[in-house]
Image (tube, rainbow, N blue to C red; front, side, top):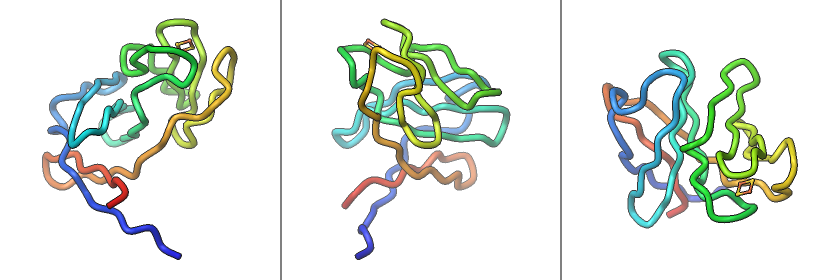
Length: 110
Ligand code: FES
């Protein structure tokens, strides 16, 4: 069965610099938007699964395609949301992302 998704506009491409991440709160979703290079876009749930921390405030590792939680250092895969190092053991959600002109659109369940 296919999951029905809706697209929400989260930000403009100019809002997130290449090699960085930023938190956006839109429609009840707390999202970490990550940009690698000019065209690599990833969107994760911003809440770390270990404790209260904003993943978007962590360091982005472009080569590894990971982001590191700023609080205790768990690295999360930008493609799967899986934690690759402790102490976090649960994945963060990953959302589909599409660029339309200058808009960053994110797929969320409807
Ligand atoms: S709060 Fe993220 S690793 Fe602990």
